[in-house]
Image 1 (tube, rainbow, N blue to C red):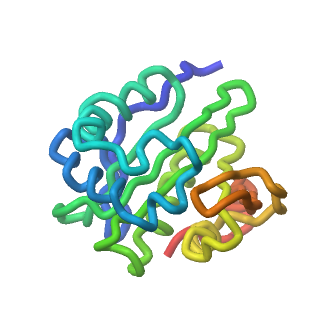
Image 2 (image 1 turned 60 degrees about the vertical axis):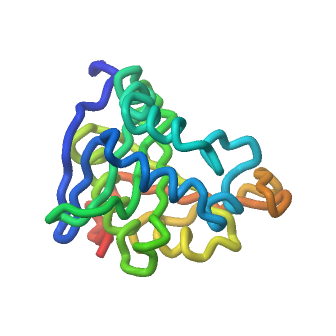
Length: 195
């Protein structure tokens, strides 16, 4: 069995750079966490929805990296490949090192929405986890009404598996979640992830 910690890496795509978070990302992370769309779609009790700047600073400085070092997953800050402002975030969490599975979470900064950033970044992280890190499955969940998140999942190559009924509670009430997954054979079958 491999060491249950993902390596700290930087990934690139045609347009994007996916790197570890740094304290300088805190202002942008804080702005995303204050965004009404982010807050409304977050599960009730989600600690970062509407969180203060000092929480964002701690998360960027050590919090997300602590998750990686303790084997729980990894988080990537997403910027344009040539640098610039943070445009998104993709993370793997809930890593099961026996089954070699993890879940994915992503968000796009309000100033970068509608450009395919999340799909491109999600596809890159999933491909990396499946092909270079030996994972057998990456899963994600999206609310049926969150068409943007569902579009990201599908564009990144994730396959819908079904609906988890009445499983989540957000500020808008109780709702279902659509379960998606990506497995190595999806890549081998020529289903091109991402854009």
